[in-house]
Amino acid sequence: MAALRERLEALRPRNGNGSPSQIDETNPPTRAELTNLLLLVMLQKQGEQWRLQNEQIQRLMEVREKRVNEDNSYMFKRFTSHHPPVYDGISDPKTFEDCIRGMQKLTYSNALKSGRWALRYSI
Image (cartoon, rainbow, N blue to C red):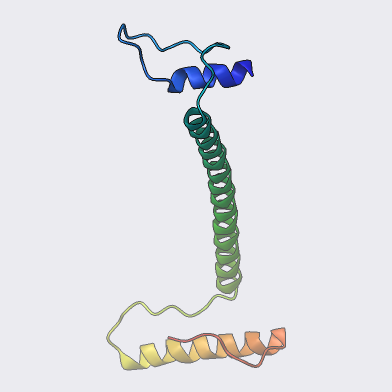
């Protein structure tokens, strides 16, 4: 009851001299003040729950982003370990076609090795 009185003290209107009116047995809190206090406490608890949920969501998003980045780097390392052909932008069509054919051979041979028939590489 003492904690309730302290909280209500902060909600009570100020007297003419600027100090809040005191709560005692002769001046019990009104229903409106109790309702305001109850709503205030509920909003504080709900805000705390939302803050905790937001923190959990943020941590999950960071873990997911880290996992995606690790997966991407692993796939890139695995792909580059096969020494794919490189096209350096020369305006020779034969060089470009050779690069495309080399990439197709690489992806087709890897699909056969892994047991997957569907090719997932496209340009």
